[in-house]
Length: 59
Image 1: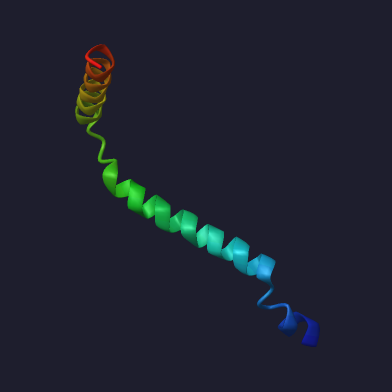
Image 2: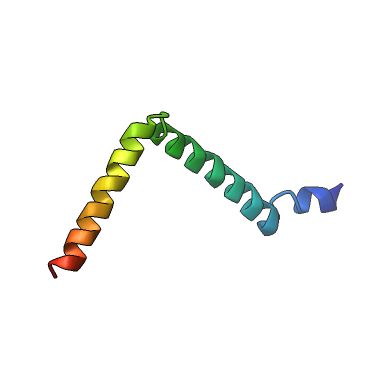
Protein backbone atom coordinates (compact mmCIF):
# COMPACT_ATOMS: atom_id res chain seq x y z
CA UNK A 1 0.00 0.00 0.00
CA UNK A 2 2.91 2.34 0.65
CA UNK A 3 4.12 1.78 -2.92
CA UNK A 4 0.67 2.56 -4.28
CA UNK A 5 0.44 5.73 -2.21
CA UNK A 6 3.93 6.73 -3.28
CA UNK A 7 3.15 6.28 -6.97
CA UNK A 8 -0.21 8.05 -6.77
CA UNK A 9 1.41 11.22 -8.10
CA UNK A 10 3.59 9.48 -10.69
CA UNK A 11 4.87 12.04 -13.26
CA UNK A 12 3.85 9.87 -16.21
CA UNK A 13 0.35 9.46 -14.83
CA UNK A 14 0.08 13.19 -14.18
CA UNK A 15 1.22 13.90 -17.74
CA UNK A 16 -1.39 11.57 -19.24
CA UNK A 17 -4.12 12.96 -17.00
CA UNK A 18 -3.12 16.51 -17.88
CA UNK A 19 -3.06 15.68 -21.58
CA UNK A 20 -6.58 14.27 -21.44
CA UNK A 21 -7.81 17.33 -19.53
CA UNK A 22 -6.21 19.57 -22.16
CA UNK A 23 -7.89 17.62 -24.97
CA UNK A 24 -11.29 17.95 -23.29
CA UNK A 25 -10.80 21.69 -22.72
CA UNK A 26 -9.69 22.19 -26.34
CA UNK A 27 -12.68 20.22 -27.59
CA UNK A 28 -15.10 22.36 -25.58
CA UNK A 29 -13.47 25.54 -26.87
CA UNK A 30 -13.50 24.48 -30.52
CA UNK A 31 -17.03 23.11 -30.28
CA UNK A 32 -18.35 26.65 -29.76
CA UNK A 33 -16.96 27.76 -33.13
CA UNK A 34 -18.74 25.00 -35.06
CA UNK A 35 -22.40 25.81 -35.14
CA UNK A 36 -23.26 23.98 -38.36
CA UNK A 37 -23.49 26.95 -40.68
CA UNK A 38 -21.96 25.47 -43.81
CA UNK A 39 -22.70 28.54 -45.94
CA UNK A 40 -20.69 30.72 -43.57
CA UNK A 41 -17.74 28.30 -43.71
CA UNK A 42 -17.90 28.19 -47.49
CA UNK A 43 -18.14 31.97 -47.70
CA UNK A 44 -15.08 32.55 -45.53
CA UNK A 45 -13.20 29.88 -47.48
CA UNK A 46 -14.03 31.71 -50.71
CA UNK A 47 -13.00 35.08 -49.25
CA UNK A 48 -9.69 33.62 -48.09
CA UNK A 49 -9.06 31.99 -51.45
CA UNK A 50 -9.78 35.20 -53.35
CA UNK A 51 -7.52 37.17 -51.01
CA UNK A 52 -4.71 34.65 -51.46
CA UNK A 53 -5.00 34.73 -55.25
CA UNK A 54 -5.14 38.54 -55.22
CA UNK A 55 -1.99 38.72 -53.10
CA UNK A 56 -0.17 36.31 -55.41
CA UNK A 57 -1.29 38.03 -58.62
CA UNK A 58 -0.69 41.63 -57.57
CA UNK A 59 2.53 41.06 -55.67
